[in-house]
Length: 195
Image (cartoon, rainbow, N blue to C red):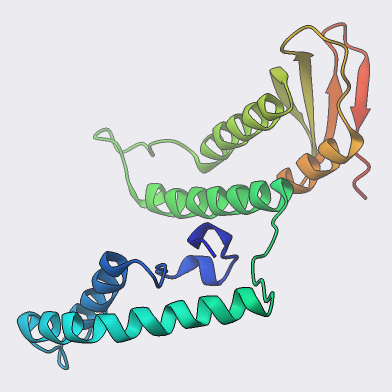
């Protein structure tokens, strides 16, 4: 298992691969440092770690062998849509935090810096552009009309491959609003069906 296989809420915590000596040692030192009143001297911890590592490594290997022998795969196959939604959720949470910080942060003239709506719009436009790029399309421009987003798009390579309804539904779900994709001529290519 890789640390990127972790899903929320576990992905929010510090994670290391058990067979990496450096990673396990760093985690152990970080835990010790966080144990302010109970921390043991670093040199003592280093000696104990070096002495115990071979036994720990053997145990980790035996777990791995048993797991592969019994075909116990704990790997979670995550779809691109799940990972994209998680990235958007994290970006929105960061946007929200930034907006809270900026609400109290003023320019020298006393005016607020950048409104949170503008920050959110920039993040959503970047998300739209990268989503379309992944499927070989280019989001030429996007506009917000009430509770919907209208995106004018074109195929990056000039081919005639289409945009799937599933792609647009996932995009609409991630953005939390209706999505309509238009060709450059203004004709609707596909529209989401959000309730």
